[in-house]
Length: 221
Image (cartoon, rainbow, N blue to C red; front, side):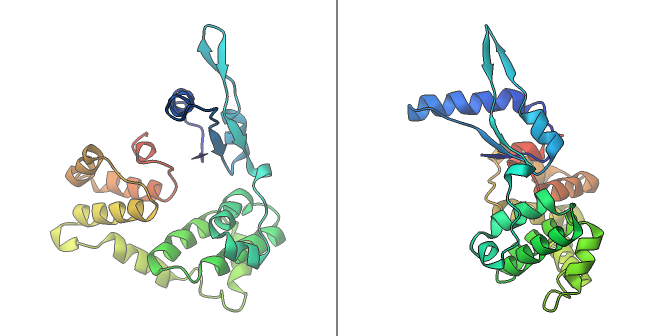
């Protein structure tokens, strides 16, 4: 399963490779499922890939219409990742629906450990319309969900290790975010991060680390 936030032509080469490699390894049919909250990206991903020799390939694409609108808080509590994905897919739509989806996701992640909760709250906030965000902030219990306190806590995490230099501190934060998301850099990728002294580049990686589905994708642009 691949999460795809925007078109990336490199994936048209890697998706067929994923399928044939896994088919050979597991000796069974294999499907690459591409999940995207963006309609244009879904249409792009659904294109047939010409492999040559008359062989064609296409992944199974689940676009925003295939991602449910999770408004029930109990369902969101049981499936918090799906609830957050629902915000990514539908948070810019009808204000009432977006508010219900965003609130359900917010309640679902409140019990999470602080670092994980901050990560998900940033995803929720950045994918909600301003009107839906303001509506959620008026709901009792969620009035401080998008506060500057969260921002400051997040920035403190990014600045950890500042005594050794701003760049080193932000690389530390970058590695923590990737680890929290279950993304493990290779030794070469870790070396590239640790040796990078370009603060602007590291900050770009930090922003993208919240959204990418693989470490390779972090460096793809």
